[in-house]
Image (cartoon, rainbow, N blue to C red; front, top):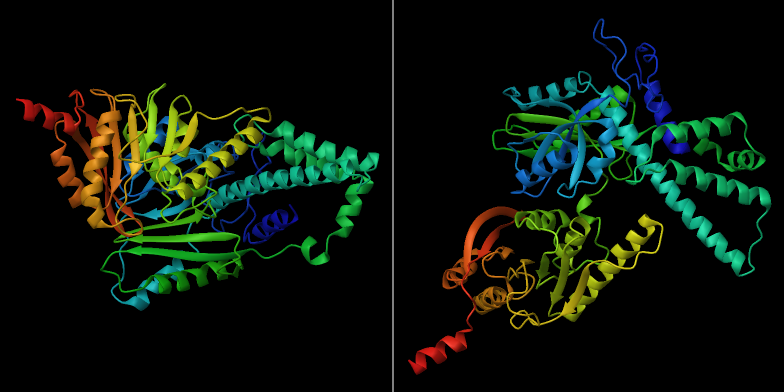
Length: 522
């Protein structure tokens, strides 16, 4: 918290002109940063943080932009704009919905938009373009986006503190139980009070309200206990003093008609940002990441709200070809799961698809299977991690999840004919796993066995593969049982792949051996 408070003080020190006092009745949970050196005449005080509306940018798996836009509309009630730069969407929200944005399952990274230039006119020479980037830093409306960054950062800090506090209490209780520790009444009361406050202010959806924490901290500062005074005195002087924020600028550039490189743009724009805010540049251990996204003539300046991609949220045990959770979510949405559906991933790997499925569609039953025992073990460990996380979130006995992990042969599944509603899987590309030569036999056999277990007439399958030629050939041979409905083109680590949505025809499955037998007897 001292680091965060120091950061806030540093931001306040940057103000070149004091703003007016906040409107009466506005919240104090997000104080004005005073970062706009040239406020508009007559603009008056800005809205309180609970009324603040900003534009959020999100990176999503390429090809699933519309899927992400649909999720934003359903969960946040906001309309999204799909960027010309593939893999990005933009939508407006109020700051009170910020925690819900972090719970979106289709987005990888989030950032708050500082300003967007949809038709930026670049100068002819590189020197002039870079000079414009330098001048741009002091003209941007930084104030509201940095308010959002602060709220987002404090939200993460408080949740981290609560987690660490819980771990410390657990370890201390174990020591007491083992007779290795002794806890006085005053210390026990302090720990209990802190935990009770954090428990009380946490909402049911896992978000944390800002106001009660600040109120609690204010009361502590007014009447500090002996324990709190001792803790403050133990803090090193260099940590208690305000620290300069560390930052970096990341430039993402796409287009052929640019006279500058990404590194040059980041260097010159970053230097201007450093001069403007008096921050310290640090490429690795930074507090603020400023984004400069350039796509042809479109420029978007933003501030990152995520430190790492959200697609890692449910996976703890990774394999050589672990599928991104965001891509798994997009594949599952394509087949529109309904309550009581049985959803099977016959080549699950680390279980990214069924784990994402059980997290978003708990009213369905999910089965993860693979022929590799190591892959099944990883999937089982990831399921166990999700179960543990669910138990912690529920704060009560949580007996299980509607998901199982099984080792099996994809060409001979231990499932009844017509018993599965949906099949979703990432098929071997023939790159890191298997080979394209083996795919010519594997793909037809997979499609045949999938058609056997899939429910005729209503069943569907969503299959991802980069070996499109082999898949198209295999699908053409299975046209009597599978009908292609839709294709989504995606980028998987630089590989151009396709996600196929197939519909199971009403044709009753007949094993090829039976067909040959009938032909022989006729």
